[in-house]
Structures are given as structure tokens and as C-alpha cells.
Length: 423
Image 1 (spheres, rainbow, N blue to C red):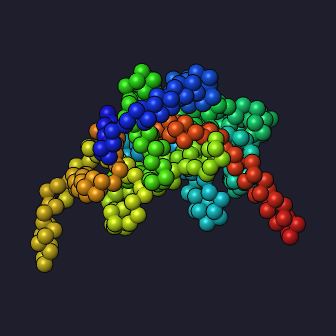
Image 2 (spheres, rainbow, N blue to C red):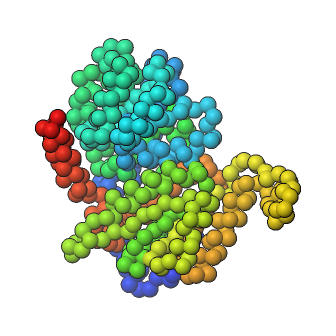
């Protein structure tokens, strides 16, 4: 169970209620018209889980593997990374997941050295099937690990992409196993599609429960039982000029990768030109407590009042690691923490910071997990996607468009061509 609470004290008036009603109507229309397909993934992807499990049971390379390599960038890897980060501690026997997600030669070399081909399944994930960085890393993996796609390593490589994409055609040519992402699901909304479900299922995670949690949130939202999402969206949209930044403050290392996923979802969806030709959007920031409270709290409290704060915490980490009663000479004040668990300490620090924020009238809300579970992970993914859709509609932008992708690809290609000429 996850509990959501808006702490800003904001009470919507007639104008805000009209905005909320209109935005919810547009989200319903997006679902019914299939403009956005992520609403259906929690139910549709259950078939993928069944298929992946059946395929894994029949594949000797998968049976012998202990590592899943995900080759992909942005939305096609960040969501998988986020869920893995939240749940990895619950799966001591799961296959490890290694992400080739940045064209950094030092990082790639280190990750390559961690992989044994005979114990690894390689997933190349690109919605367009042409992502330059992904294809470059795929080429490097083929070369480094001497992958024989025509014979011995055919079952060791799986493609996840749009149906009919260049990568899909490549996979068909070599007879590689392929899973497709619905065309109306953008990469940053694709976590619960094959992009995330295939690697997580192969690694051994309970993806059926993940999808079940997401499905319940979707159902409750469209039944009108999650009004807090629209209330939060309306506050953010109505006050976008006064509070152009949202800081997601996750208390726990389990949220590190989730913050990265959230930042892409928020930035790529909401940084747009609105229908009046104005630049608009909300800037996402990710922080981890307690580390970042020591570096950022001063700015939040006494710096520019231009941020909304979202706190995420876990009531029960299901880990009773206790702070021992070890007296430290000359440090008697440290004895106050003795006897508490580290989970207790983390949450009391979160509560203390929350109270300081609230007293300063800084707009804030809290998201409290009763524990880290598969259902909660599925729910929180969908929660942020729904919030993004609502805010996008309230800002009068096309939340799902990606207008800079083609110009960016052209510019990168131009630079590569210039580099070829120089060489």
C-alpha cells in the first residue's frame, strides 16, 4: 500500500476544478482513442510474462545464464533500472542485470569485463530500432564477445523494438527472438511493456505482481478514486511560473535509479512549446535522503522559493539492522541513536525535514510506501505517468510528442560524418 498526502494546504477553487475536470476528460480521451497506450500495458503485458517464461524454460542459454545485459538508453532502460533498484534486495537469487546505457568508453570497458558470454543473455532495446548510441554499443558487444548471431549465439540475443523497425528487420534476418513495444507507447512510458517486463522476468522478478499493482492504480484512477493525482497536477500546472521546479526527495538508496527515470519522464514529456507558442515545462530534480539533505536543505529552506518538494519514504524496510549501543568517548550526544534501527533513523530524519519544509510554507507532498513490494513498484510507476499526462494537458502541450529527437539525430549524424571526413 502507498499513501499519498498533499501538504501544501492548497484548496482548489472554481477555476482549478474546471481545469481538473477538463484534464481528466482529456486523459480519458487519450485512453479511448489509443493516442497513448501505456494505460493498457498492465493488463496487456501479462501475456508477455507468460510467453517469456515459456521461452526461458525451453532455452538452454537462458537456463545456464546468471546475467542479463540490457543494451539501451533513456526510457528503454531507465524504467527497468528503477524497478530493479527498488526490488533487487528482495531477490538474492535473481540474475544480475547490467546496463550498457552510456557511450562512455571507461564505463563500457569496465562493464564488458564483468560479463562472461557463456552465462549472459543480451537484450538490445530500442523503440525506433535506430538509436545511435544503442546500435554503437550493440556493435561493440558483438565484436567484444564474438557473438555468432547466425549459429551458436542466436538464442543469446533478444531484440525489443517497434514492429517493423530496422532492428526488428535485423532480428528477423538472423532469426533472433523479438518482442515488440506498442507503437503508441513512447520510450519513457514503456517500463511496463516488453522493454521492462522481458528483462525483469528473465532476471527472475515477479512481474505479474508488478503488473497487478499497476493495473489496480489504473482502474482506481479511471473510476475516480485517486483524486489526489489531479489535485497535485493542478497545483503544479497553475503555479508553474512561481514554482518551475519539482524536487523528488527519496529517502533511501532504493530510489536512486527511480529518480533518474522520473527526471526523463518529467523533462521529456513536459518541456514543450505550448499551443500559444510559449516555452513551458517543469524542471525535475532528484535527491536522495539523507545524503542530499546535508547539501540541498539550506538552498531549499533559504534559497529561491521556486520549488515544490515531493518526499518518498518507506515505513518498513524489512531490515532490522540496529545501531549498536557502542559508547563513543567524548561524543556522548551520539548515544541518542543507540537502539534504533537504521530504517527508524532514516524515516525520523525524513519526518524532521518534512516538518521544517511545511513550516516554511513550501509546497510539498508525501508518498509513503508501507514496504517495498512488486505491487507498490508497479503502482508508483503508473502514478507518475498519470501525473505527467494530467500536467501536460493542463499546460496545453502534447505530452507524448518528441519534437527534438529527429533534429538531434540529424545533428549527431552530421558530426559523425564530419568526423569521418577528418579521419
